[in-house]
Every structure is written in C-alpha cells, then in structure tokens.
Length: 119
Image 1 (cartoon, rainbow, N blue to C red):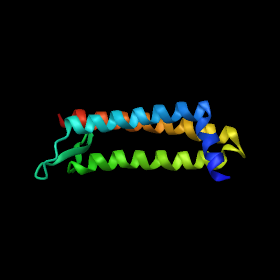
Image 2: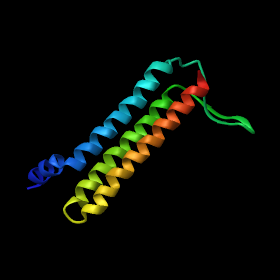
Image 3: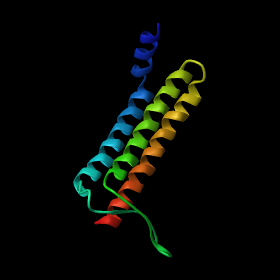
Image 4: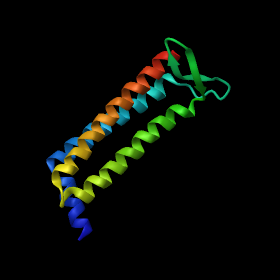
C-alpha cells in the first residue's frame, strides 16, 4: 500500500513541479560550486564576511559542499514530510513543498554570494 501511495504522490502535478524546481536549484548551486571553487587543501576560503568587520570566518573548499549537502538534506526531509502529510493535510504538504523551494532559493543566493566574495 505504501508503494501505491508513493506512486500517487509522485504523480501529482504540484509535487512534480516542486521537485523539478528543487532539483534545478540544487543542481545550479552545485554547478556554481564546481566551476568556481577549486579543491585546494592548502587554500582557505572566506565563508563569512561583513562590511563593517571584514572577514569573520574562513574555511576549506569542502565547506561549500557542506552548505550544499545541508540544502539537499532538508529537501529530502521536506519531501518525506510532505509525503506523510499528503493524504491527511494536503495544504500543509503543499506548504512544506513550497517552503522547500524558498529554502533552496535562499541557499542558492547564499552560495552565489560566498563564491562571489572568494573570486
């Protein structure tokens, strides 16, 4: 029964649209990282910068992939929560999926800003 529910959940138009947008956002942020951040263990990258205080936190190249992995983890978590609530509270499930899009947009903007500081 769970397989049938999962198939029906993934066939919904709203779910498909949210998944496609989330995949595009995650792939875009991953491509930005791949293209601009080189895997040099001896180089330290700026991770947190303010205009008043300057550089506050530095780290290595794998920290960018950690940011991306956090976004991926929350996308999977939101998808599972949306699946759990889909047949009980459909509006809550739709809210969870749309908030995931918003989260990935902010993640993409943050990754782009951090990469731009390091160029």
